[in-house]
Image (cartoon, rainbow, N blue to C red; front, top):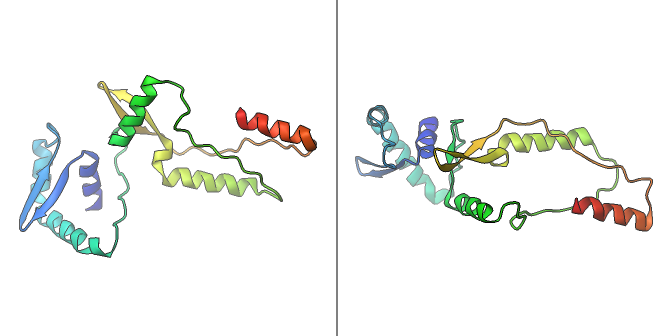
Length: 172
């Protein structure tokens, strides 16, 4: 059921329970005859799911369902806004957030790379790219890359040389 609900949400189909009536709101052209049939066939199941969601809403937010489809996804309004601003000023780093950290002690590079790879696997938004499809910006999700750290060993530098090299690499 969650896969079907997730599929409908990816299509921007909104469902609501109104007593024994299932209300369906979808963008024009989304509800094909086949999709209408699937919704009708699963009406009781969908209503039960929506009631369960409504009753559990008071106990806290429900988890965001994982997107099942690998098809291009519509952008949220916030994503469209940032995409539009990026079109107005290409290459701008205004919305980039960067951070530098100084690590001391032994670093288990393999463990850090594995941890970052797992974060990329679990959060597809970190692997998403925006492409124009049929004249509209759409999100495409890349496969999970093997994350490899690019690091520099600066042990041979000291004092001002070290500080200058760190600043140079941060700017780069």
